[in-house]
Length: 148
Image (cartoon, rainbow, N blue to C red; front, top):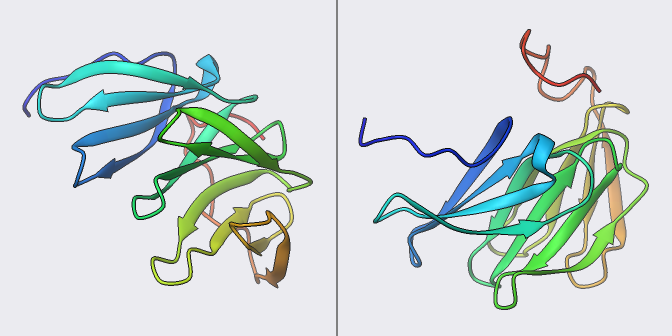
């Protein structure tokens, strides 16, 4: 282990950008995404997001961060050039994970509360499809995970 760094209460998900060396952490109880300089293991900032951030999606090509906000039922798009929220994708059901297709830049958002994966256009925030799953995305919560 290289070291440890306190970023706030209940850090949950992390994504790193190999080009910038920055890492982004969803900090559940702080309602923020912490920004870490990976080369120097330093907390260099934070980005305010709505209620209970739990998942992080990163699109380095478009310099966008997507943060799923569990209890707010939305995913927040953050412009990494300004470190500001641009818009929220709303009306999700317990959004947890966010993955970005590197070619189309489409978002795939797991909705734990509805057993679906939503496909979203990153330009407009519009839903393109909902893919029904046989069981809850992510399986069972670990015993210390936040309640949904």
